[in-house]
Amino acid sequence: MMDKLSQDQPNKQHPKPMWFPDRRPQRLSILHRVLIALIPSLVLLSISWRNSPSFPNIWPDRGCRHGLTIEQRAVKILRENPLIDGHNDLMIFIRGKYMNHIYDADFKDKFENGGFPQHVDLPRLEQGMQGGAFWSAFMPCPMGNGTDFADENYSEIVRATLDQLDLFRRLSLSYPKYFSPSTNSSEALKAFENGRLISPVAIEGLHQIGNSISTLRLYHQLGVRYATLTWNCHNKFADSALESGPRYEARVAKPYWHGLSPAGRELVKEMNRMGMLVDLAHVSKETMKDVLVGNEDGDWNGSLAPPIFSHSSAYAICPHPRNVPDDILQFVKQRESIVMINFSPGFISCVPGDSPSGLPDTYPPNATLNQVVQHIKYVGELIGYDYVGIGTDYDGIDSTPVGLEDVSKFPDLVAELLRQGVSDEDAAKVVGRNLLRVWKEADQVAAKLQARTLPLEDDLQNPWLT
Image (cartoon, rainbow, N blue to C red; front, side, top):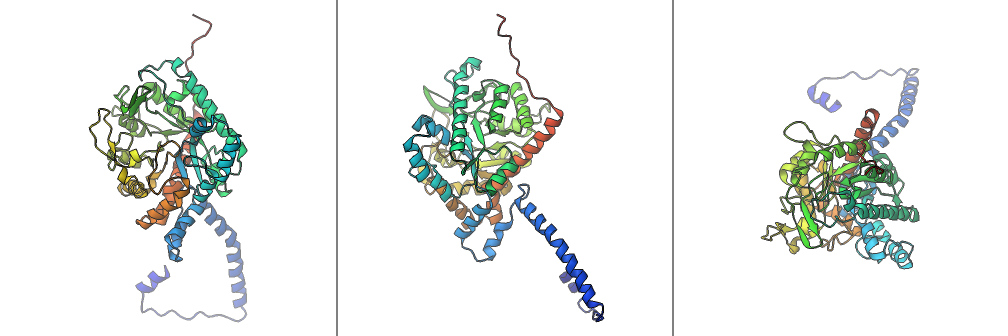
């Protein structure tokens, strides 16, 4: 302000201040007392602003002004902002490799000291400066024709999901220094500040609830904070992008509901009320639009809280039905949602193919760290860096991009973003601040709905009547 005034009035002469000897010490004393009184308020204001997930963390941008290297700036960003992976399949890998036994000597040795198969162990989590993850309690779709939604088809899947949730609870209790079950965005940020991994759980498809809203609420009580609406099968609530089964490879799915079913709309409302994030990875394009903005008839306006894409990439770069097309990305921006870029080579590097499945062909030469950065930049430059994040799919994919072999490589990813011109502030948003913002908004929507609406109830038959 003083510079502007001096430019407006360059020739004006200001009289010298008149300090009287007997008054000056008193004036200075008053000024000192005012400044001292203001210091605590200014400190508290700066801390609360810096730590609020509602605002992007601007502190990392100071790194370049202090002469830090790109690698040092990347470390600074990860130290001050939680890198939250939107989707990690560690639990299903433990089930497959160790049959859910985490007290086994071989498991403990390799998980604690390094050398654990696949992509995650404690030393690599520390090396990668990971701040947290949504840990998926995954189970595959039931066998069948894909449109038989009878309750009895899901009983084993529900039980196996509970096994997965119990596994993660035992893992958290065994390694409390690392895993902090975070029930809301505020707890998540506190966990990061205390040096622990932000560790909510997720389910990957509503086939895992067995057509039961009560079961979904139970999962929420057990720590589940997002539910993917479908995996590779339609269900009672929504259409999926793909279908796969024991007798055939994945293929493009034919529409069944053409988006959400009537029951699906009610379920999304209940997820909003609970504070459970609605995940659109794996769903059909019609389902994406239905949840983001509703339908053209105007009788359904979509999710009240912004949904997420926990592990999807940009369709314009890799034309796979699992990825997000440009027109849907515009709805993502409109709803202040987030697309978390998947690391699976088949979803980041592909070209149109002629397979009967309708799926593109993977192009291995471009399955690299750079290609992941291109997906992040594409979304960021098209709709803004407020709406993009990271959802690796580690431990759920057979191969990884060159340069992103496991969770230890996250500093390299952030450094490459900076190297390719992404600002420190935007990189901080990408690694986790954006997800915290969406999560916080979902918490706020839930608080309002819980104050004025009741839980959705299942319609159950009397078991004693035939």
